[in-house]
Length: 178
Length: 422
Image (tube, rainbow over all chains, first blue to last red; front, side, top):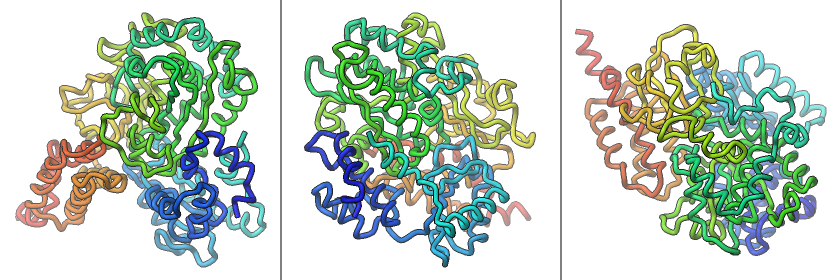
């Protein structure tokens, strides 16, 4: 339950908005819930609704509208590869195919070991670093085959050893809360 | 190259408060606090800082629409930078967050807003560490919170993270999203200055617009008015991407640098990637009509591309070489708009779906002459029928490529290819 686990952070999150506007915290809360449950699962939706005090249907509609929330299970590491025009001009379509081949999956599938999902996403605002992707919201720029091989093997090793570094959501929405 | 927004680019650790203070930081805010609110608005009005998100609406005028007096008011920073090819606000905020905080505080003081929300697109969370730290440091030093710099002015500043929706760059959609609802625009009026976030008077400003404010306060409106052209005062960050040697953000004085210089100039991109020829560019991400070689000697300014039926917009320049398939490029951009349409207005929701379907058919070599006509028809039927600019701009890739590259469309139609082969 994120309500207990992140009680202090959630309280500080609500303090950013007027007391009668708890709904404003729905996006950050869903980020935290998704981090906890892996995707916008029923559990995640219901819990966020309970924390805010609104109908779960509302939270579900939010999760469906915004592209960073996953409606189905995803791998531990989500490769969101931009293939919008600026990245595509620099080979992004081939990069996506390459990553899928290396991992043995189609887009949006989860690898058998549960570690990876590959998605293609719209412009991430790093066109000067094309082709690029974000992995659990962390940007990986100037993608090359060598870089991708290294990243996959690093992430496999991290998952095996259980020594994952804190995620972007952890660092921004949880740890920095003043 | 100009050097106003990026004047600190070579200063190491400018993101740290003490370094920013050592380099003239928060002098603009101090000066503003020594003036009346009305005087600050007058100064910014005189400088004519046109909105850098693309629409070009003068910031001072926008601020002056806010009601006076002691009512609850908000300033919201639009960091939902999501136009394809745009990455300037990310650099400005990631490398120099204090410049934006300072600009926002000057704006908040002038309008009497006591809360600033900085609405980031969720995908930029990774770029927000320095801004989170900057906020914390400002609170610790009395630059945020109660009685800023010992004055009567108190103001809070909060980051707020979205979750992936281009439409939230539209100000009313952004405000809906900030209130925890779907990011869908509302029909104006009410304008945000009348009833914005939580129904209170609100001003939404772009990151780059606010970054212009501190130097204007320090150097004065007269200095700023002398930069740029009559209709485009000041400087602009141009995001260069695509088939160029050195993609990146470049700051230019408006009206002084041409698109050709940006692509080929020594100080800028230093030419086309792999020495290929130039074919076309999108001057404003997906939203500005594509232009060709004929437009390359136009200058970067709000009015610079008028004669070529296009616009500077957010100045997100996507450059394409002579091997680029323009129908494919139109499909890519149209797919973006279809994906990002919020679904509220039928012409946009259905129209972008049909535009993509027709373009996909043509790209796949399954299209007909009739499809090309239909593409043009659907695009023109969408124009002027949607609540916000998304639906309006979504037709631009199709219409502008049809205008300049009809031969490429025709070459995709199988029968036409057979005729050509005979």
